[in-house]
Amino acid sequence: MNKPSRLLSIGASEINTLMNGSEAEIHELWLIKTKQKKEPDLTNPKECDNWFQVMLGTLTESLNLTAFEYNFPDLNVRLNTEAYAYKNKSFITATPDALIYDKNENLIAVIDAKHTHPFNGNYNNKEERVATTYYWQMQQQMLCLGVDKYYISPIYGNSHGDVIEGRASSSDQLKLIGRAEWFWDHVENMKEPPVTEPIKAVVPSEYRSIKLSETNFASEISEHVNVWLDNKDSVNKFKEADKQIKQLIPDDVNHASDYGIVITRSKPSKTRANGSLTIKEKRE
Image (cartoon, rainbow, N blue to C red; front, side, top):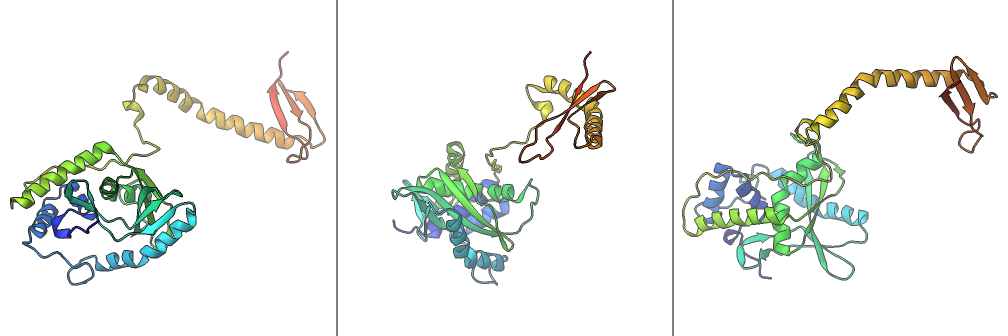
């Protein structure tokens, strides 16, 4: 596929600017696409504020992907430098760091290598931060390549982190296409884009964080929680007493009773040479 010009398209690394809706950043991108401002040279420290971070990510990309291949030997990872356009919308493009094929030579996923800091920021963990930061970028990559899965292979500081996996969202990709069409219409017609609302990235997760009071089972769980809280200390005291009683029983005793309880010892096993003790309430 012919490589689209960066000035003639919105790359996946640029879509986050449009989706986040920063007025200043969208305006600057519009100036660049309409050739009213020179695109910064990311390899030139005088033109790129985060030049060192950009170069570090570039230089560690190959090592990063090698580590990914080591951990996923069944996946066929191929480095990529080609830009791909989405169907007949040549202004929506993506250049993944690598493409992933299965054993039958079917393209199944895209992958990007990221070198970032190890902190959580305003997120629950660093994986959530990375997945959210690059969410729109990865959605555009999948859109342009026609796949429904992506991987992000992160380096945090000097450590290779757990691989982050994600899936395509058709609803979010429609939002992405709509925002790209809106912006490109302003580029082609030399109209400065107006201030627009950001479209927040909500990264799907296997696990969710919820407020119990906002669920449809709030009243039911509230009753159980009250019981749990009222008896928490009692349970802890019970466990401690159970432990102390068992510690006092000699190893050669397999049955003991008094004070309203019965203590029995199970048969010895490979893991418990003296068996294990069980305490039950004595019933008359």
